[in-house]
Image 1: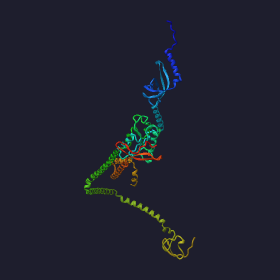
Image 2 (image 1 turned 120 degrees about the vertical axis):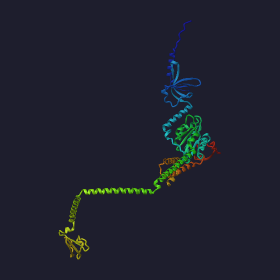
Image 3 (image 1 turned 135 degrees about the vertical axis):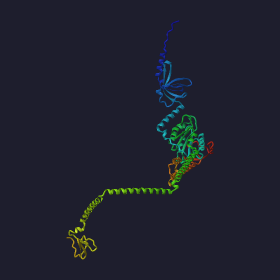
Image 4 (image 1 turned 90 degrees about the horizontal axis):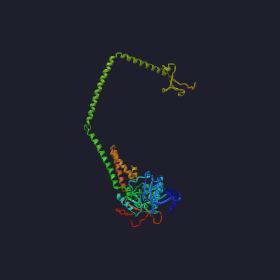
Length: 428
Length: 100
């Protein structure tokens, strides 16, 4: 046996290293999209997600690190068809390769879901789903508007429930197509129509029975969601669903999981309302009668008192009181008088004292009189003045007041002079 | 009095019911004098009457809106009969799928 030439060889590590360099640096493998179904999905507590992607013929290990997956808007699920973006890496120690995922997207129906999520986020930012916008539904709607297919199960259910709860309710159906292309437009148009004041609608129910995810899609369309949002009339979203509710639910004033449930929310039970009115009415009645009988009792208690049974008692009692007061007054006065008398006896000089008071009063009077006398015309006349009076006794103050031939009297301090005016000279 | 008569038809069922309840509470408090009690009582009876009338205002009918015939955009309402046990619409004419 010839010594075989030792062939050129790689160590396992060398080979793996070459592969690793080749694969991890090749643009063919570093930024690629891979499509497949998720399998063996593990959400690790570290936040990393480990799974396998597969199709009919092959498997590919994948890791979605926390830094890359933390902003994901949907949740990966077993069996979900996805599009993954990322690069291949080689795991030397295990001689395996795997995909390092940077981004994941739902594929197909998943893509639709993602579109809804995006729309939802956009409308949310716009305030369309603001819960504070939701209005209370009217307690007693006279007329309800319904937006749905005229031939579907939804309208039947709504009519049945509404009439059962409120036999004389009015329903106006604005027909719409509720699935497939173009359905969204008809739903939005029907909502707009029912909002016209001419229809006089109190509350709108818009929806359809349950169906596949795609069937319910019209109620996730922007035009429909906006029609709900813009509805002047309070509106209920009534789309049959089990898990994922449509966006119309978020924009509506109220949402129900089925059209029947929506009718229950919208239409009150008439008998309940009648009971409520009756209840308040009986409260009012009872409390009025209670009030009346209370007042009657108070009156009865009053009139049954002794005083009303024997009115003369008041007079008698007052009489007695009067007597008592009189007695007491008399007694008081008597003691008062006797006390005063004792006082008088104790002060014998009282006469002189009173004389003194009198004297001073007399003096004051004299002084006052003197002052008055000084002002008297008589006093003035003592100094040689006189007063002329006309025949009627009026004092002549001016030459104007008299004329030649007038009879006048001149008063002096001790008598009068009767005279006739000879002439009047004005001025001095 | 005149004013309240005029306002009565505009009173909503909710408002009337709420006021009715308030009157019931005021009367139950028992603080009212006899005159006021009777006034409130009369008001309550009136409100109960309004509530009752409101309940009977609607006149059981089901209508369907349809586009006008001559391709105008006008929308018309048409009354239809329904089976109240099933809610099914009984109508001779073909039910149109939508308004547009």
